[in-house]
Image 1: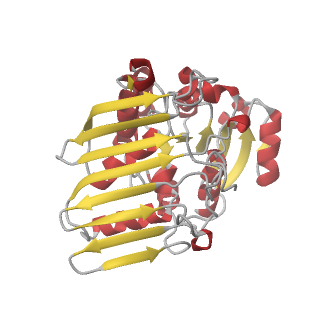
Image 2: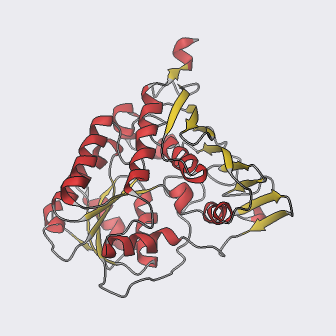
Length: 361
């Protein structure tokens, strides 16, 4: 996948099968965002079996099938949902349409694995919660900036081991390269993509919840702006927010569409985790000024060490195997439903209450 464009970026799969062929069969429906390829790679690496692909645009379905020839192109969504052997449906539909797809999937008796942001309104969140409770199916979310990034996985392990003590603050940056000419029309319509804090901000909020160990939080302040892309009036090209979590920790994040063309990758994503006994910094995708260094750099400082770890190809992505087993065993080891929905809720709330900095100036 391209290092230049975050919409098509996915790390190379690191197979860690937890099941055999046919133990968990899945399909892909809704190919509007390139993250569907990362979702599919992850599930295949965990041993899941891909049977179907469907999108209303046959060109997208054919391109997907060319990449994954084991996927049969379905004639309709119903052909996939009516297949009793399909246990899980992965989707990356237009953001505002992801919840509706999930409701249809769950009503068909299947688990759902959607790209982030999983929804765009609080009304959709309420509908998704009701469907989960009624059907007993899963509404899993691909928060890829933690789940499909090796430094993020390693940081979780360090935090769990107590390497930095109690986490008291998480700061995240999520810059992305816009590449406006390659984006579909819906990408620039706020009612479709949800706004920058709902969309790519959901990655950051999920990480704040996860690393702090919080179960809830309050958006204290949030801001958006369209500083430099007035030809797309529905676009937020900048957003940030501050949160206070229910356990007393705090979080701050910034996301933007200002990655310059000269940067070696689509975004210099970083996170900083402060603990009472040390801190962790992640340089997820690159080392500035050193293309040969590659991705996956983590820095740890605590009472006993100051260490730079390069974990590229060493940690893997356990989420996908955990998700496959969760679907089969009806457990919640990959991510709890409450956590997935809480990250979405706080992202929507951050967007709803955001001050428009340009309109205010």
